[in-house]
Length: 97
Image (tube, rainbow, N blue to C red; front, side, top):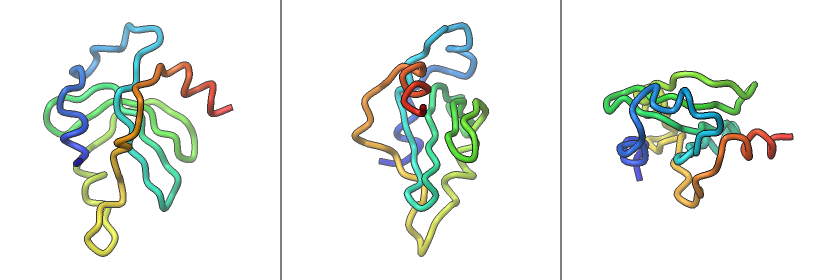
């Protein structure tokens, strides 16, 4: 499954900004770095909104073309977690410790 296939049915940008504890339906990850992207919204073209868990855990806009171009020997470095169960943001934050 591609990154774009994973996000195609997400709510549009800013659709969840007034939701106290949104459901996180999509998760991307990079095995090599241990970074994770929790995706909440998608503009239908190139931009998503969600949380990245890398050096810090922070909210922000995610540019899909940037993630898609990260490859090693032609293999995508950012993958869709196809086993991800949609989870509330509060649970994700709690599990981080």
